Length: 164
Ligand SMILES: [Zn+2]
Image (cartoon, rainbow, N blue to C red; front, side, top):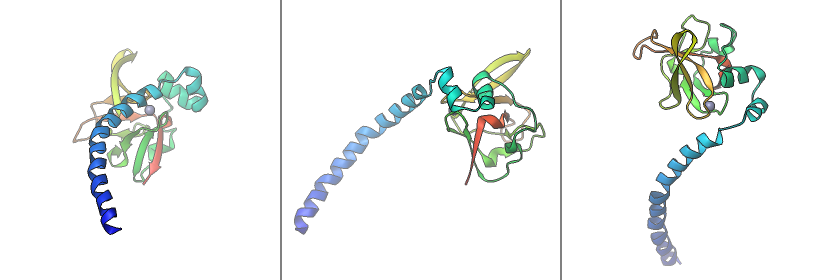
């Protein structure tokens, strides 16, 4: 019996590791492609998922009133996720009080946000949005603290905070 078992394990283990090698890279590639596609929702679908306020920020590049978000004063350890698709965007140890009235971070989680230049206030600003669902988050400025010197000025309504 023991001999029989060990022979099965002996055959199974190399077989499983071959499967892992074959399928792992494909799975990663497939999930990154699918995830963006998955979040290509229509206006109506977004409206049914989000509150009116969050829809205005995330999907129409709106800006909430300064000092209106509870997340501005959030000081617990945790992760700030996109309110649209739940992708983790910022870690609490990169958050700081910029005094602007919006939750501010000096760095984002690598690859989680993408930027574009907008001219809404005539002077060009760098808008950034969730890399997965495209939801508008805020604007990034070059007056933040070291080591990056960046200030990601984020709308609280575009985020969902999960404490550790
Ligand atoms: Zn998102």
